[in-house]
Image (tube, rainbow, N blue to C red):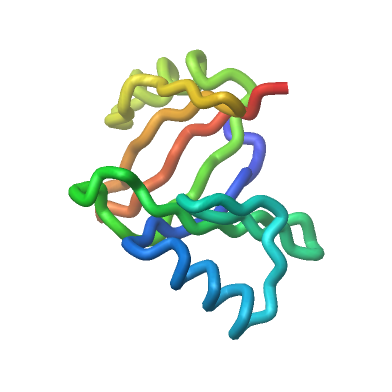
Length: 114
């Protein structure tokens, strides 16, 4: 069901400052960037991202997007196994559902649109 990782990333309170750090200090070049965040696709194909949520109550920290071919089916199966996942949200480029493991580490079930 989980076929890979689409993105490793951080939610942050100051996207501009954080993006500048990764660009200017670590020398990474964004493959996508806007006022709310950036994605950096590395030479091995791994994607790392930073994102500043609109909601200041949204927790900051690390997260991972697990790739699935069908978000609806994956969420149904994972819920049946005991995962607590949000309802699926749709963006212009993907479908995603948010969850946490028993230690509170956040992850998303993520289906890219083709």
